[in-house]
Length: 276
Ligand SMILES: Nc1ncnc2c1ncn2[C@@H]1O[C@H](COP(=O)(O)OP(=O)(O)OP(=O)(O)O)[C@@H](O)[C@H]1O
Ligand SMILES: [Mg+2]
Image (cartoon, rainbow, N blue to C red; front, side, top):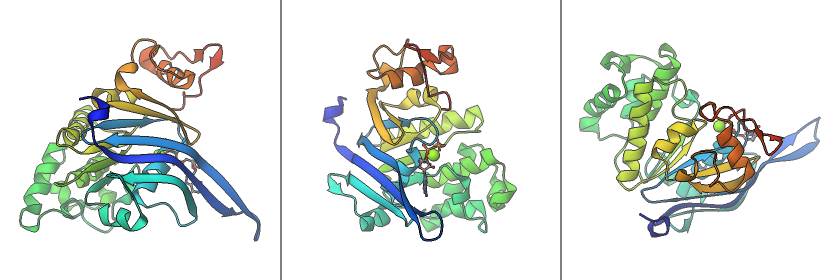
């Protein structure tokens, strides 16, 4: 399917995010980590968002979900199904039509057994069975459901977090680094599920440092740098030496990957993507 044929689900246009901070005493300063972000996702499309650490990927996710801290001020526009995504709409859709897999496992409730957390939002009569089948799918044992978050390893917690996102009726999935520290088998199951969301008609934003895995399922890739979108490329353009990528920055990110010989020198300039 051609991109222009896909109905736009999410449009982030010219997004900026500033924070006001008190420095000494009553002195205030404004920092603006996000200056000019553009991302669009069509129905049935997987869009990977890549960029160095600190480039603004999580802030992008949080702004769409409406979970930025109170001192954040946003500019630009976010449209969902062609209509402005107001704070009220964000709240209504979050955890229902818009599903979120956060980067930090601290989003899990430390005082609730993980099985119960995965059952939230599932149909009551079938919740337990559905949760057990999700656990089996992501390599968790049935008994793990009775454990509290602090009793699970980091990789297990990531799989629990992912399981909380698999819901009927999800139209947009925002996955913020869903795969670090995950066993290869669970990684491929997570990628398969993200692709399945898209096959079922949802849009998927996959924020990741793992470009190679993302390319297995992504249709397009948004490259961000210092809070601005520098390139939006077809996933197929990430091949060879990256000749089909338009910007030097995207090419340098691609060439800096271990699979591409860690080519940190590009056009005589050191690539700044090595902290990906
Ligand atoms: N609450 C906040 N107040 C002030 N600055 C913030 C806040 N949250 C994030 N930032 C800054 O915004 C920038 C982008 O942060 P963000 O967490 O979005 O990066 P990221 O691309 O997700 O990084 P990583 O790949 O390490 O997860 C960083 O410079 C960060 O310090
Ligand atoms: Mg992040």
